[in-house]
Image (cartoon, rainbow, N blue to C red; front, side, top):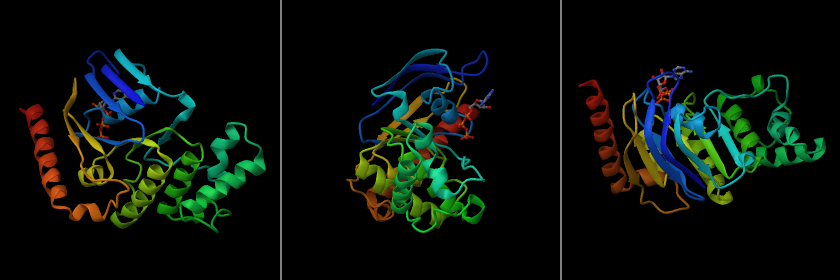
Length: 248
Ligand SMILES: Nc1ncnc2c1ncn2[C@@H]1O[C@H](COP(=O)(O)OP(=O)(O)OP(=O)(O)O)[C@@H](O)[C@H]1O
């Protein structure tokens, strides 16, 4: 689905990332964690085609149109209703108006927003706006969804609810995901594998963790599995170690 090989990326002379290799298989949910400033967003930007690599390769096993993005700031148009916003990507792709609005409505319902299609973004809660943004992306039927801290502005309960719905939908549709998150628990609860990035400059993949919990998965229930605690502890220790290594 996605293969990144020996990638170097940066904005100036010293690469932010160097020698980064990772992959995401079809239907796989992969998270990327690491110290602040290590280059997680930079890597995602390059995979999205927004930043040119200094060297190395990014290979996608699907056309660029099948790449979906969800970033921290939601990009809803304030003068369009929830339904029109959810239909926006489809309209840009040339879908006729009524068909696009019908499809958008179906995705709003799948995300628990039935009856709210006529509201404008300022008439929705933060969690509901995120759901509209998610409907907009999923309506485009992406093969790989890139997400950069998409739910960081939400409180813990809303975040749990939306990630549970997200997981149900991506598992159902077989969508691959690459998620950048600061939240190690979230990374473990959602993912099949987690990559830990080392501290930059010249950050690289320090470790990779297979996550053993089967699918379909309840991202809340899985947290009471004793293996979850063990993995989380290891992840915290390794994150601390890479951060300390850089500081010394
Ligand atoms: N547009 C830019 N121009 C120059 N330097 C940049 C730019 N964007 C990011 N950087 C630098 O690149 C490095 C990596 O930034 P990036 O945002 O990718 O890290 P991150 O791991 O996503 O951080 P965080 O976890 O804090 O969001 C940082 O040192 C940052 O200052």
